[in-house]
Image 1: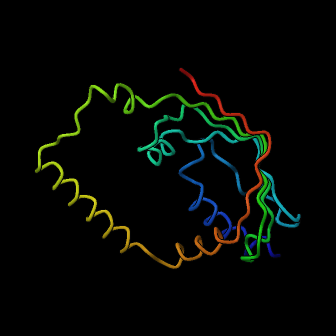
Image 2: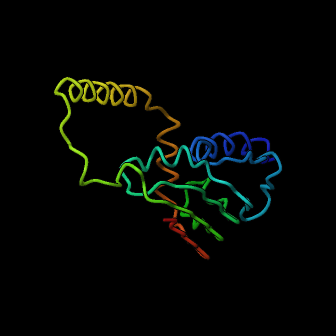
Image 3: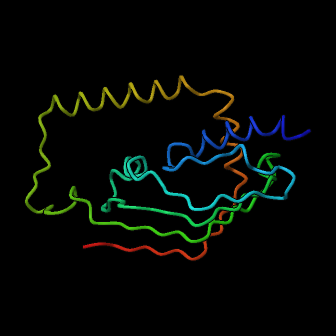
Amino acid sequence: NMNVVIRPLFKYIFKRIFGGFIKNDINLDEVDFSMKSFCLNDIEMNTYEINKLMEDSPFKLISMSIKSIDVPWAIIKFDWADVKVDGVEVILMPSPKFQNVDNQTEEKPEFVENTQEHEEEHEKEMYNSEVSLSSSLVTKILSNIGLTLTNVVVKVLP
């Protein structure tokens, strides 16, 4: 049975790529591998993790939900896969970091900048040391994904 072989690999790859960004627990044990694709429904996104990626953005993510994501199994074979995402709702607000920019000064003590640069270099070294087979698999999969978004609503709160 192919499910026995593919399921653990799929679960690992899925959680590695999307795990930190999905708020609700998705039961991948119930995914049917005999179909041409699988569909995930009613997904709430983890705003905290996404906001960390949007640190330099003028917006802060308040909430994000996705009605459905349809993923073809071709993704597992490293073939081209068109992932269909439907019913995306995003609610943003202006980032407090970018408000009242005129009243802020950019001067920082020299030692703070040096400490920050040192921490960034250390993070880069840590990241580079963690490169493994799993990250090359993830990269290979992501390079073969097309994305189709439908029914997208973005609201920006004052």
